[in-house]
Length: 310
Length: 310
View 1 (cartoon, rainbow over the protein chains, first blue to last red):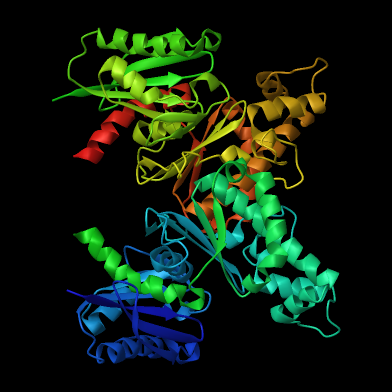
View 2 (cartoon, chains in turn blue, red):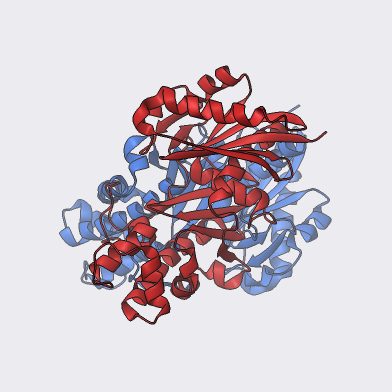
């Protein structure tokens, strides 16, 4: 019998929910505002309403449950968000159990970058491997590690904090207390800040797209920024490859269109710093599911939990 | 019924073999010379003779099989050593199957640092946790990653190459092709080379023990060397903690007695570079089994394989 689940991608400003069948076909999708300023009860109401709206569509097949990707650390056994920069009012609250009680169906929480990695592993760029690492390049850099088809969580749900790998020991300061974190040298935000620092445009706050277009047009400063970003990514990727010896490392996020400008420097660093990379068929590739990866990964969680139980 | 296995620790110059029961009691031990210059047939003969010598002791209990720790990368499914600096004549040869045929019992090969990590996980400093990372500080730095009680191998048996994590992007050159590898800044060999570079003794080639004794006596150059080593270790450990969020990270090897001289700088770097470390009960400790860790870990392999099969 066919089955479907509902995945929810809870962001700082909006949420998306989708009904997905066990082959990864998206059957229906809804979205809503998160409006963090309206507080916990409102946001939980939006999550529950979105799920009920999808279930009211009378989709064929048995309902397997709900998976929710959230930005923050999750105590997996308790279903509690330990820490979330964007949704701090959801911290230290029995979120999973509360939503389960309201819906009467099983709910699984997962960190958003982990959910994205799981989505790519299920039906994305990693569908042909069991093990992968995903780096999501955005405001910061998130990481998700999938091993034997399952997310690695660590003992407190804090594994995969790959944006805070030190790539420049005396580099740019980071809000985490460190200096030289990967995300301060290679995130989308880092690119725009470097561009402002180098005055690549006559106006402040250039967008990543402007910088990319300047690089395309031959501007050496813009090209140098992507080169520098690529080097930082390459140092981090070499460390991940030397640590895991996984077959696949994926990148996603806004800067991906600039691949041709950052990838050469990235691969040069990886080749230099990882003999494993030089001597094996290790792949570094673009993720495939874009902004939908987390939604698919969240939807996969109930299916995976069933496999585990059977 | 009681059971026992035989673990073998195959080094570049000698091998040790031990019969161990399933509670981790060592029942008997033998050692032999590896004599690499005598070639493959001789070394395999020494391995087989050592195992037969132990089995001839008529130890009580069912015999579970043989585990062998070897210095090199292992293709786990094939039981073949892909690459070994010290025992290159064993590369690309069906070593596991050959020894199984000669003995008529199941044999499992494992990388030596991985075996040491598994030994510590079984009955050593990590007996109370499921997940740990071990760094072995010797000529180089080896790494072993144990997750849910089992070694992480990667797709070609090359996981855990933690001695080649980049900790100083423009640091000391390494034979692997990189610069700034952890093992070029924090291994036992790195300590003696730094001491020679700093002329801490009037004669060349000071031993690690001499440098340690000088540090004890208040020599600031000797102390600075351990400080520098600690910083390199701390940068690497912070990255491992941010990646894995495991509860335990272990150090073993010759420089351990100098803990009080390198650990403060190490922990300072870890605190600075890992908010996970600062906010959780993550432990960084000395391994407990010393040079026996790999032998115990090798002996555990047949027991673990049984658990897996049942």
